[in-house]
Length: 164
Image (cartoon, rainbow, N blue to C red; front, side):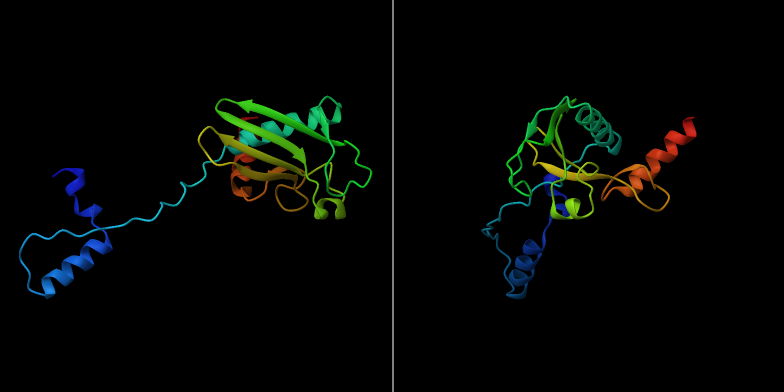
């Protein structure tokens, strides 16, 4: 049996049409039209946590040393000053843009020199985004953590500690 004939490729539409055809007692060969909507985008593939943390480390180091170009953000910048350091980096097939967070919450909590917003993509893939912060509580307190991927960070730090 070829893959195209596999019952695993039978969908609910085909089964519903077959049931209706059978219910009417029809036995001749039938042809049905099927219109398919656009398929949803593929799930976003993200870089490994270690890679995100490596770009984060490079960004913060170069930003502290004043070795990165700066942009003038439109929000929370009444003077129009160029103060927000920006890094464009590549690691293998990945492209990254890193900059400190300029959100209202980052300003409110005085985290505009801690929270790093990381944009990433590979060719022919939608852009993704993560925020990397210094954890303030729990087992990762004081360590850099990729928000939304804390479990992976915990595993990475545990593995790193085990190698020492």
